[in-house]
Image 1 (cartoon, protein in one colour):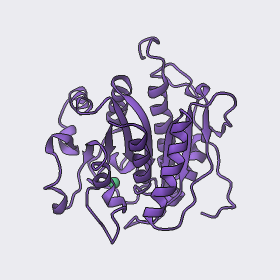
Image 2 (cartoon, helix red, strand yellow):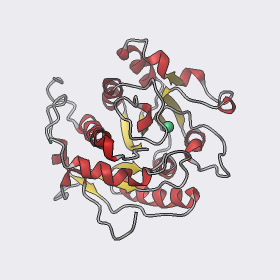
Image 3 (spheres, protein in one colour):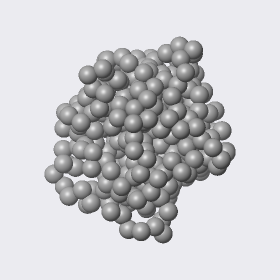
Image 4 (tube, protein in one colour):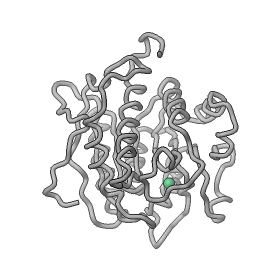
Length: 292
Ligand SMILES: [Mn+2]
């Protein structure tokens, strides 16, 4: 993505007045291993967001009124280590401004710098990962900051909970905590409220949420670089995000691995809708009317 391309704003809205949310596009695809194109993810998501309707039905709110700004993209074509440093700096600035950071990838390696920034700002926190993959390799293809290593880096800084997992390497299994992994095939056979409650109960008061879109089933989100069948449904994810927002303090989140394809523009829209819905859950006044 060249520097001359002007990025759209989330919702096509320029923030005026108070800003509570900063969207940070990170069009980086330095480490993905199969289908390339996640660097085009942020642009596609932002472009699709202009088609969202602004009233959020489940919370009966209009989250855009809280002030959402879209920052210039982090443009880095260097190593994932350098990328992490750039993202770290940007997310730190957002947190210091008292705003909620929303990082748009890019491949999953973009989350590492964001989680490091969260760790520097909040002494004790958890990382909730939604993903098809464990992403827990200590190193991959010569880098400890590869997308396949995100959760190995995260667990050095925070407790982690992994949801939707259905793809792994044998080398990852000994290091995982089985109580903190919610395998997709188990989720699908359990009542949603039950596993959601269990997952949320394992989280600290403050939580960074890292959403790899391939955690969702490829039937509803085909445009991702490494799709794996048997994933979460839209309402599984909504139930989880709503409960986390009610029971914990979300300090920021990332949405990664949208790999746009011309035949699957619905994936771009889903990703935009996901960002807006999660913001609605985080920002809704807690004393407001019960949800619809
Ligand atoms: Mn993944």
